[in-house]
Length: 426
Image 1 (cartoon, helix red, strand yellow):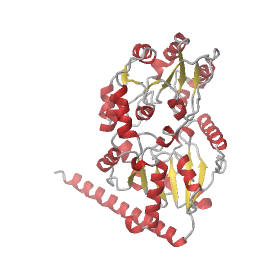
Image 2: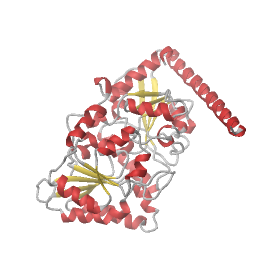
Image 3: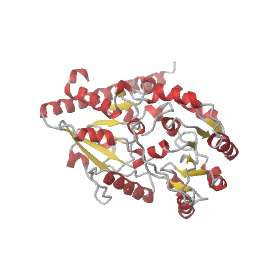
Image 4: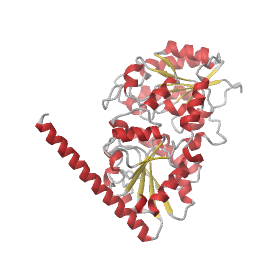
C-alpha cells in the first residue's frame, strides 16, 4: 500500500472525526440551552425562490405551536443574474402576501443579519450548498446553529452531489423523503447519514391535498384541450462534473411549433428550470433580448403559457409532461399521468442514479428529440394509449405517500419535539 496515501487516509479520518465530535458538542450545547431557557425555540426559514420553497406547511404548524417562534427571511441566490434575483424576490412577496404570511423582506443594501438580529436556534435552508446566499444568510456563517433541510427536489441521483457536501455532514437534521434515501446517505455521506430522519417528501402535503387551483389560462373559445407541460432543465452545457440534461437548444423552436400545430387539441405550458433564464442570458447565441422575447412568446400564445413559479397546481391539473429535469422525474408521478423524458443517451444519466431513481425513470416514456415528442403527444396524450399507467399507480402507492399516516410537516414537528425535549434520545 502507498504509505503517503495511507497517511492521507488517516489524516482524513482523524480530521473528520474531530470535526463531527466538535459539531456534536455544538449541537448538544445549543439543545441544552433551549431546554434550560424555557422560552420558545427560535426558528428561521430561508426563502430563496417560490419554486424551491418547501416549508409553508411546517411554518404554519410552528405558528400554531407555543413552543416555537418562526420567521421567514427572503434571500435570493447570489449565483443568479440580477434580473433573476429580482424576479425571485417579487414572486416570493406575491406568494406570501397572497397567504397572509409575514416575512422579513430582502434588502440588498443591508441584508438582515440573522445571527445578530434574530439569534435563531434552528435555520432551515432551501438547498444544501454553500455560498449561495449573502454571508449574513449563508449556511457557512451559521454552522454553530441547528441547521436543517428539506430536499428541494425528490432526489434520484447518488454520490457526493446528492449526499456528501459539507452541509450534508455538518447540518443537525436532514429530513429525507424515503428509507431508500436514508440508505443512500448511509452509503455515501462521511457521517453515514446519522443526521437523517425520514419524514416524506415535503411537496407531498400539497400534492395530496383535496383541491387544486386551475392555473391554466382560459382559451379564447372557452373549450378545454389536453394540457401538456414542457419543463426543460438549465444544464445546456456540462458543469460541476454533472451530466448535462437539457435539450432546450435543440427543442426550443420545435416545442413552439408543436403547440401551434396542435392548437385545436392541445394547450402547452412552458415551465423552465429557474436557472435556465440566467444560463440563456449568458449564452453566446441567446443573450437577454432573445431570451426575454422567447419567454414572452410562450406567455402571449393563444394556447401557450409561461410558468416560472410554483408548479404543484400546474402538475395536478395537467394531462401529461415532457421534460429533462431530475427533480420532476419523481414529482410528476404524484399526478399519476403520462410523462416523457428526453435524452440523447440515457446510459450516462442512469449511471448517476440510485435504484430509486432508476425505477422512477423506468416509468417514463423515453425520447431523443422532437420526433419522439410528437409521437408521444399524438399517441399517448391525444390518443390515450398509455401502457405504463398501472405501474405508475403502484409506484405512487409504494413510494410517494408519506410515512406514519401523517403529513410531512407533522412528521417533522414530531421529530423536532422529540429531539428538543429529550437530549438523551438525540
